[in-house]
Amino acid sequence: QVELVESGGGLVHTGGSLRLSCAASGRTNNMYAMGWFRQPPGKEREIVAAISWSSGSTYYADSVKGRFTISRDNAKNTLYLQMNSLKLADTAVYYCAADQSGSSVYEYWGQGTQVTVSS
Image (cartoon, rainbow, N blue to C red; front, side):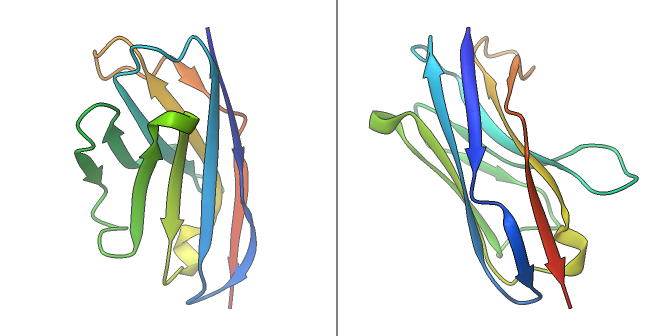
């Protein structure tokens, strides 16, 4: 079992920045990948970014490319999402998730953290 706890959400004005963190605990060995997802109000959850835990290779949704950066600290079992140039459309509940099986199915999820961007 893997437990994930997000932090760092909050209220920010357009153009501002936030850094989300996701601390993983439990059976974190053999982690394959981790990702950030978000669910805007009234919409379905979507992937934002993902990172291979071993190689560090990354994936970004087109909507955040060039503005968001995903990174991880393997020693601390912590995932980060640096969000810059935030837009109103970035308002959502952000979740971190872990894929331990390597099947691109994220088996473990955090509780989510609210990010609100205001004008």
